[in-house]
Length: 220
Image (cartoon, rainbow, N blue to C red; front, side, top):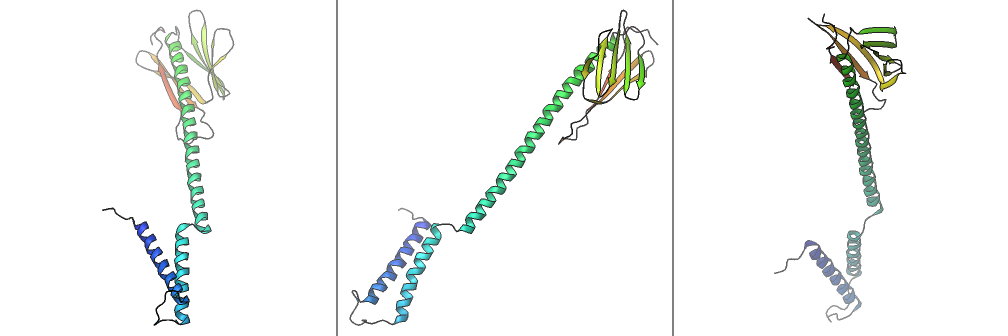
């Protein structure tokens, strides 16, 4: 047996009510009316007409949406779209920040490894020179030349011999060269704090510490 859906059953019920009301109207007009009921009261006639009107109103109400319902649906759609756009914007901003942090970490690691290699090759004790509050120099002596690191104006530069300075890392908030005397040798630490971006969604503090020991320098 075929099952009838609830919507189809409701449609059949409304159709039956409509046909019943129409048959009453025809009976009120005298069409195929029995001889025992030739005249009906006005109240019965008004009741039949009202029944037809109610059936039409119910069918039209279930077939369409009102203007208020459409406005409510549109408002809900705008809210969902606004939330989705906000989430997409925040995810894109976070992705950009992570990519920028990855680039900064890579550049800092490369500069730190280069500094450690220079310190290992030193043939004499290293010397820190504080030129001013915003400029610090680290002298790494070799046999034939001297490598110098300078921190000034938010950047770390390197110079090997007489040539001009070449920037190895920026932007840098703070850079400190610290000597760490041990039992037989003097180790050196380089502490770096990068300048964080102005607009950042993460609470990442870009701090780095590199440690190196001169292998060719005379023992302490």
